[in-house]
Image (cartoon, rainbow, N blue to C red; front, top):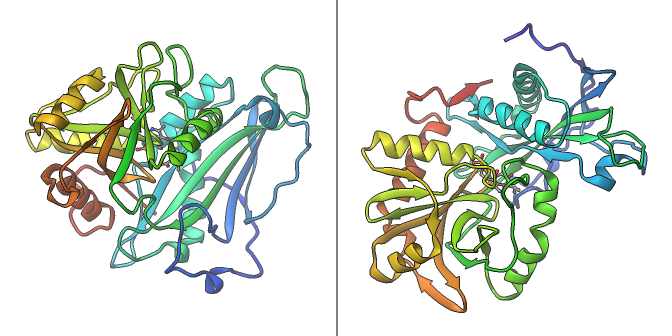
Length: 354
Ligand code: PLP
Ligand code: COI
């Protein structure tokens, strides 16, 4: 840890807190009063500032808009019953933030600056953290290229921004999922492991087509054969097959999820065998048919633990057990929930206290 981060602070003259309906918080539409901003220029990070949330003026020629030098993170802060505020495992996001930066030829940000900037703005806007069950303050740090230059070359200047917003659950029901066999999210040598904005842009058309067919989510398969399961929408796909937790290994086509890592840690503690390996569509379908697939869910910060209700593959739909009856994912959800909201001891040191 370096010294405490020095930043300029301009508080809003008018808080929107009282106007915000905390009983109606669709994901990603409500933003708190303040944001953190920093600039990268001349080879260093500078101009650290917290200011009222609002528009950022920029040139229409910035290379982020044209060539996609942009990426983000997703983290959540929670309020405990005694008022304590904690952020879940931000040091993991700080590391992943820099992996994304390196892949996109963008500057890294010292991990302690990443964490302190987030903690500072969360601290200032702590009244924005919802206290209802399944609710949290979503933290969205991101970086984008700001050179007003149309040459295809890495920008020399960048902005780092952290915005916050109170959120409820991302998914409200068991998901009807389509196993995608045409489009690809990530190929080997690509940038699937980075939280690059472009990865999400590329997912919109397949996602919309799946939605038009009545599905809630896509399961991405490998780019070469479409035979192995990679991820589930914006979450890692995890399965309990014949008593073993299986998930795709975190290689270059997979986002190395913090929730995924957390679920694996809990499973190991509980004596459940864990395999991080290629997961074939065939074994999942077989498991669904035989009943050996006792759990299937997406794991992610926004998604939390999102149960799969059914899979569709090549026009055939396979239904899984009622999510309420699934011992593993319910135990994971309840255990994590108790840790995040401070109802149980944080023996892993996962809560960063603000
Ligand atoms: N995979 C993708 C593509 C994602 O966008 C996310 C969401 O962040 C995840 C997995 C889950 O990662 P995490 O648990 O760190 O949020
Ligand atoms: C997150 O879980 O934080 C994500 O980034 C998912 C988001 C794209 C909705």
